[in-house]
Length: 264
Image (cartoon, rainbow, N blue to C red; front, side, top):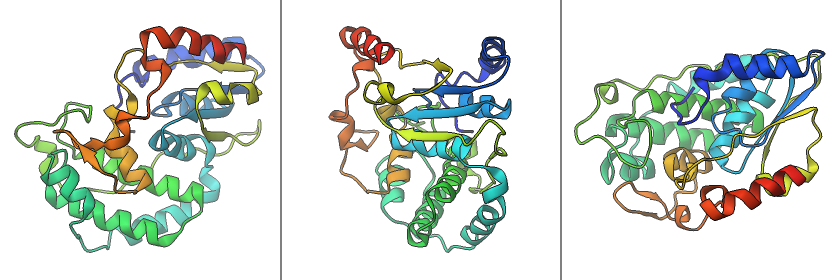
């Protein structure tokens, strides 16, 4: 999985055991701020029916691959698509200019591969779950060869050693379906979707400072949406980082927003 601040990687055992103690007979768990999808993935692996939600497109893509999609349905086709993508001819385009030349998050050689693979994916018009799996494979491949300290707010002055390695696609760890029923990934604001949630347990892990996850991982948002947006600043962030604000990144806003989620 991608490097992600607040991913709960070190706490997965504790989170999973707590959920299991509260739902000893199993059931449905909703993760309203799914982020990297690590928690939802772990709970699905334990047999829970999981509903993951996030308002960022890249996070929704991660949850679609790691929570909603089932391995038995997509494994063979995903492997075939990844095999085709490995044959593309590198071609420098928007991603290379934005994130390898104007900014230096990735080496231009890998940027050209990312550009070519993403354009091919766009041309394939894949089903949403299959496309999510393939995009996660590309996201994770890029993450393994980035030149950052883990956030996309800045990049290294000199190339990180991993950035000089060639990009390599791998099949994501997509899990089999669970007996409890189909899992689900939604793309919505937590306050707005809270009234629709039907679950035995809701896991709430909202942002905890003023920095938005959209700004922290703007390269992934642009890679997933492939809308080639206007950018700004040294980090070449998407222009909508300035306008897509969340109450959960505001000291006066988070209290009322969290109360609204719980009331919903």
